[in-house]
Length: 227
Image (cartoon, rainbow, N blue to C red; front, side, top):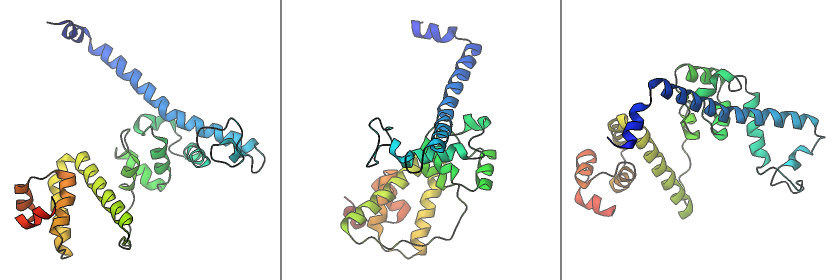
């Protein structure tokens, strides 16, 4: 038995639980830090004459010499978090993400949606800003105008690829469902772009040629276009 194994065996569950509690306390302080920052900013703004509060932050044309290292937009996010009737409650600390940007996105949700998500455990420390959008109530979707410039087309492809890759990584148990849904969507709209579809799936799934043929019905010519 080496030294590392001996040390591991010597640590009791009681000690592990103490360490876990300490980690949890420190994590809660990360969330509390965003709340404290927002509360402090609200107090400072209340004492500033009209138009002078913005000068405290980087990016203002007449910022003070020792301006805060972030802009007024970030300050407003902290303030919104601190003013929120649910996110500002201390008992939610261990369930909330530590990123102030993600907390801000949560603050924009309807109260009923946020409350339900907390009750169902859908809000957790590892969630990111894009995850908040999944909590939004369904609404009628208006298609965007197709991008026409090369740069817009490149940005659209990058957004699609990033979204597919993120969902594929985050929900491994639902990968078969993702493939089924995307295939059904393409067929429902009578899409005739198998090479494009193969490219998008390859970004997310890294499909082999055989899998691409079996799942999407692509032939060798279609696959060759993606190489």
